[in-house]
Amino acid sequence: MKVKTLILGAGAAGMFCASRAGGDVLVIDHAKAAGEKIRISGGGRCNFTNLDIQFSNYICANPHFHKSALSQFTQWDFIELMAKYGIAWHEKTLGQLFCDESAKDVVAMLRQEMDKAGADLWLQTEIETIQKDGAHFHVALSRQGRRVVIEAENLVVATGGKSIPKMGATGIGYKIASDFGIKVTETRAGLVPFTFDAERFKALAGLSSEVTARAARGPAFTEGMLFTHRGLSGPSMLQISSYWREGEAITLDMSPKRSLAEFLKSEKRGAGKKYLTTILGMIFPARLVEHLAGVMDMSGNIADWSDKRLTELADQLHAWELIPTGSEGYRTAEVTLGGVDTDELSSKTMEAKKVKGLYFIGECVDVTGWLGGYNFQWAWASAAAAGRAISA
Image (cartoon, rainbow, N blue to C red):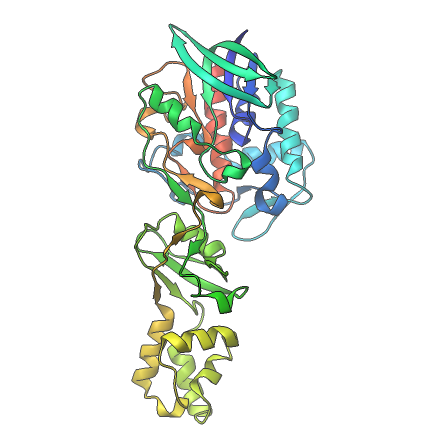
């Protein structure tokens, strides 16, 4: 069977590329349904983009690579497409856009866009072998118990990363790249909760708090943090996890919007007979104060503390340093960091420089966005870039 373009992967990038690649397109996926990660994203509402897309919101070995695609297809372009389909959305926080109703609306929209473009979709289809003979790719597939060989001028790899293997993630895109002599950078789990020793935060499980969090490298994030039975989660933790390396410490400002030194000194003047833990209980949950008192000296009445000691304690709480034992890994990671080396690709078209007609888009490329719709925007933008090049 011959097609102009074969797209491997029916996720966000693969489906969107199919709608932009100019017809005679076949999309294949081993899953039972297309767009499953879209369906579960954002608590079922799909955080499909962000109002404030900045190039600095992405992690890439080449900090300039993603600029071209993101400039050619912006968040406003995708918002316009949503409007055409009458899909209502709302801003939740920090520019993050979610569907009012269901993430399934985005999947349905992408399927309709594919239908308009005349693209075919084969699900529950496995890749057996991929070869290139002259100007054509020959891809052997296993479908409905039989072997089918597809001949294609263009091969688009949109297979995603290793994150959430229970959804079918395999990292096959990295193997395809390597088989064609294309370099792949180190991959690791990103946007993922931290783990600690089993009993470390067990008594605090379920508590949440706004913090400013920072890893040893990268920016600080002021967002929510959640204590879990296994460690720390919540938006702030997911954000810094993409910059964290095993064995490194993370730093938490437990009171990012209030000077604790000023607060404690003020309370000392007006309520000196109260226990210091009682004073801290005015701004922190009791369980958290009890935990902090076990790792920091908070004994006695506040009146017994000198201003210097109060300042030192405040500094500790504004810069609480912890060393995670690890992360939850790909099992719960929202994205995979690293991937196909961007030095191997054209930033304008996503085509491999060494292999004509071979494209890599979406999560399998070494471009990772922050939490908040940035990775979906990269999927749309990189897919649009490849689709534009193929249809030209």
